[in-house]
Structures are given as structure tokens and as C-alpha cells.
Length: 205
Image (cartoon, rainbow, N blue to C red; front, side, top):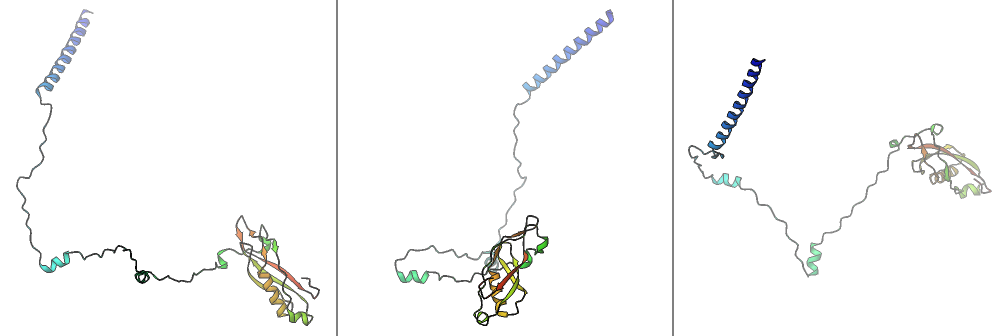
């Protein structure tokens, strides 16, 4: 037990002496060594000489950039003739509007459309005077293409009355008709509908 106690005392004493010695060395280094280090910039060992050579006249012309024309500032004038001379003439152009092709929006058969178009306005066709004078009556069935805005994009005779004048009058009336737009899967589509027109001398359709 006495030997173990002596060894503990020896190691503790040695540890303290080592710590004190380390602190003394560090403090001495801070005191003796300089606190700031001067950094000198790098300098060339020898000077570099720059040689300037004159360019030939041909190369000088190529090296010079072409002069840029500066825009002239507007100057106020009081002479009407000068104002008219410097006024830019109005430009006239014809606006070109392109009608969308029928193939851009799908045409769905009437029986397949989920929300079918409903007629909002079916005009009364004008009875041709020649057919009225001749006492000609008849019924015309027009097949009309209802567009996505409810207007008629195209129309054709599905069932003729046998008289061209009555057929033409029915076509003109069908093109002026309006329907509610048709929908297929929450998307507006085109659809063909049939519009019957009856021509009678009593004035009914």
C-alpha cells in the first residue's frame, strides 16, 4: 500500500511539473518571438522592357473603327413648311384576319355529345316571291354545323324541297340561327344538327 501511494504521488508531481514547464515555454515564446510579421510584395528580379512599333498606314486604317453616326436631336421650328416636310406620312395597311379552320376543334356526332346544343334563335326564312306567286310549297331540312360559340359555321341541304329557291332561302335562314354550345367531357365541340323549314302559303314554317 505504501508503494502504490508513493507511485501516485510521483505521477501527480511529475504531471504538475510538466504542465508548469509547458506554460513557461509558451509564455516565453510569446514574449521573445515578434508579434507581427511583415509581408513584402513580390518584385520582379529584372525589369521588362516594352517595345512600341509603329504600324504601317494600311494597318492603322484597318485598326481604326468606322465612325458611328449619332442621331440628330430634334430642333423646334416655327415654320409650317418645315413641319410638313419633316412629318412622317401615315402608314396604311390592311388587317389580315384568319378564320380558324374547322379541323382545329373536333366535330362530334350528335348522338355522342354529352351536352347537346339547344336552339336559341331560329329565324323565319323569307318566302321567295316567285315560289309564292307560283303557289309552290315544300319542306327543307338543313344540316347545320353549330360552332363552339353557338353560331352556325356551315350549312348544307340534308333534304331538298325540290325547288332551288326554297332551298336557298332555308340555307340563308339556317346560317343566321343560334344554339347553345355543345360540350363533350367539359370541352366545347362542334356538332351537326338538323333544322327543318316548312314553306306554306299560309305563312307557317
